[in-house]
Length: 448
Image (cartoon, rainbow, N blue to C red; front, side, top):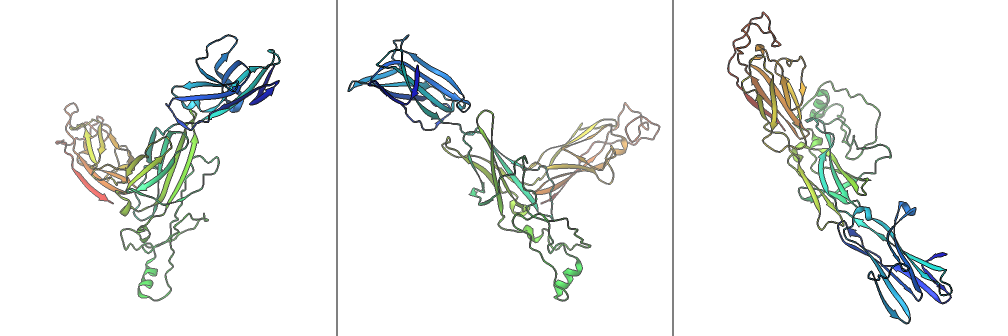
């Protein structure tokens, strides 16, 4: 007969059990679980359990049975006022996240009145296993994205921290200084990766007003022009409004509402459990981008965690594309060859990832399309008519845009008789063109 209890006194025999509390431990540490119990009875058994699934499953991790063992090497005992004080220990040499959870120590003694009766008492302790984050990265949301000169754009940085337990504290810095951001509420349930899209609505400014209104405002006569200050926070959703602007006066390169010296930042922090017991944390920083002051700004995401001795960080510099490096293969293209024009890189490190668009100056591309997206433009079976054609590559991100022009000059192909190829490079009766040395002429136009 087993009677579970933490303290029991029957027929003069008593049993008390307690487990020493444990501070949080870090993955890889060695941990010793200590179970202390005091009794004046005769030992029967000691059993350690690891409790899982909310207490529904108990897994034995150590058993001592006094009926079949005389080994007390795992126990320390001494006599005090005819009482026996024991300590049973279980050592975990390298704890893992899976070791996190409650543990129980069960002790049984024989009742003094009859050896057929066993008195049982237990104690429990919770082992809290922490894990430091294993990776951190900073990404730009909704990229690649184009550059917009006259319309404000929202820009969002996403910091992803994986492998930590518990969830870390994540914050952003700009140029080494902490950013004071307005916290945003948690995303509604079931919306997935929800993010604020319309922090600012497009409103009129003094670079986008009809000439008539602008003229009246300048001379001070007539009706005063309507001015609307753009909202600086989260604006309520409005119904569709048709904005009719018959004429546009561009008085400056950037609108007035782009020249905000101190941007307002919005911050959101979420975390989601992972199957291995860790947590993936995501922090977003959103503001209205100003290409003039945000270009070459250094943003860092830093993480504080109780399992880390110092903060963990990842940083990015917002940079507009500049000076694309373009290569053409083959270097000596001939009629009928497939020509590949590729952007291999830039003069600087560009972030976020640029958007590439190819166009042919003054005409359509070889396949008949107006433009092609991607880092590489492929011209299959180039005909002689493409000799001297010029191609424009526009590389842009929200910080700026740059155009690079490359001229293609084709070589004669001895395997194709002159005058036998058409505009697609196939054999026809059309007259051929005289083919000259391949040259690449590069002209760079930067917009920042």
